Image 1: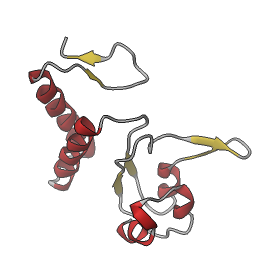
Image 2: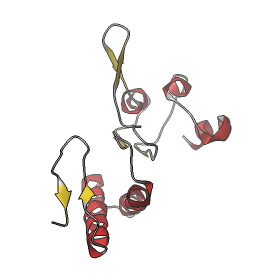
Image 3: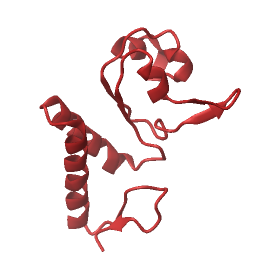
Length: 125
């Protein structure tokens, strides 16, 4: 992936840039807003970064499905990556990073909406 990113101007790439990709990491973390969404096109074909990367060996893609609050999401993703690199199973690394973000933000009295698809899922009540 790093070669793919470096090959594209401005460190931006889209799904079309992945069509010639031949290898990828087992786990890929994406930080861009809505990079986890699935698009429907053509003859009801569903495409996403995950579907494209799975063709070349990626088994997990961690990515937001909505517009993110960068101040909250990026450090949380960094913590999840650190946990995963340290050997934690991916689900536990993500769960621990989210719990740390909730604790960090609750100390500042900020409610956290964990999913835009689940209204009322605010924490710090």
